Picture 1: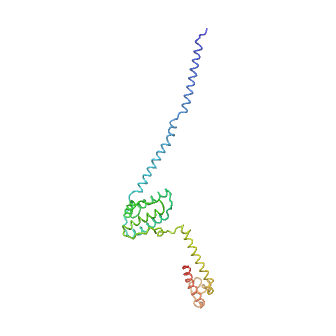
Picture 2: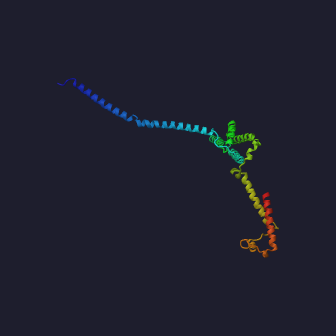
Picture 3: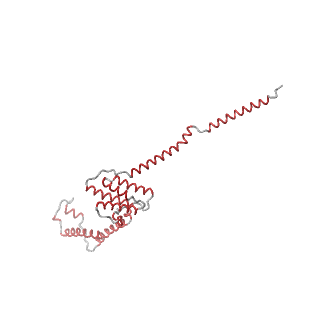
Length: 265
């Protein structure tokens, strides 16, 4: 006769087996979904790189600032003539840059000009001149908000240099005209117009000369070669007539007169 406890024991074993199988399935699925060490490393790498990049950018910015505000680099320049020529050329470049600077510069353009000014001071080929200008720029910082501001600032610091040297001061209201470079914009505008007017004047002068009633033909090339030889090395006075003299004289005086009139038009 079967024991009454047998079905209950069988059910318990079945439940335990099912629980064991469910546990194994759960553990295996959890382990497959859990992030591995390599996954954690890859997840952390972008943030590490981002931090390193930010630190490097900050380091570069610090170096740039130190570079811009550093001491003058070049040695002294003892030759007074070379120093004067250098000064004239440098000031012409300096003021021309300000005259060509944008009217409404972007932040990047303003930073570029300000950086250029500081590097110009540090690298100026005359050491004692650079040191003096460095003090002036430190007292009057560069103004780069617009073309007019930059040009006025450059004129002001130039006058500060001239004061220390006992030289005549510039009229800063006309500094732009003084350092007019006559660049591409001028050639497209007024400069181009003037060039066309000059060409038109030359053409008109030649046309007037050729249509003048009293104008006489110049001596032909064949006639000149006949008198002076094949290459102009020989001169045969016997072939030279009175008419030839008249033509050469009128041709020579006519070129000078009409050339002068073309310049005056």
